[in-house]
Amino acid sequence: MEITSLAFKDGGRIPQKHAMPGAGGDNLSIPLSWKNPPAGTKSFALSIVDIHPVANNWMHWLVVNILAGVNSLPEGASGRRMPPGSIELRNSFGDTGYGGPQPPRGTGDHPYVITLYALNADKLNLGTSTYLSAFKKALEGKVLASASITGKYGR
Image (tube, rainbow, N blue to C red; front, side, top):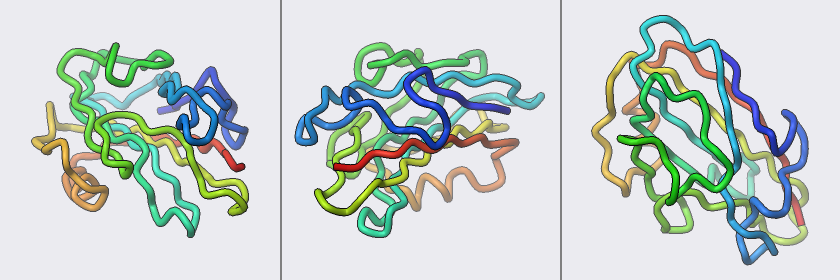
C-alpha cells in the first residue's frame, strides 16, 4: 500500500496554505491519495501527528471509518467534503477535523507523519473526543497494512 500527496513529496515541505491561520495559512486539509490496499480491507483510518519532541505527538487529524472503496481525500476535504460514513475526531487544538501545522517559532522544522491504516473492520466505534492513545488501541488487531509519508513545516 502506498500513500502520496499532490501538495508535497515524502520528506518535503508542507505548503503554507495547509498551515493554521496563526502560522499564516488557510488551514486547508492536505490532499491525499492511496493505492494497493491489501485484500480484505474493509475500511481505512488516517492520522497526522507531529512527532517533534516539543510537540509531543500533537494530533493534527484523526479520521476513522473511511470506506474501503475510497482512495483519496481532496484538498480542503476536512469539514466539507469528507467521504460518506467517515468520522473526523477532535485534534489537539480542540477542534473537530483537520488542524494544520502551527509549530512554536524557533523550534525548527517539525515532522508531520501522515499514516493511513487499512483495517479488517468495517468501522471503529470511537467518539469524536478520542485521544491518540485510544485511537491506536482501537487499531490493535485490525491493521492489515499501513503506509506513511512525512511532511515538514517550521517557522
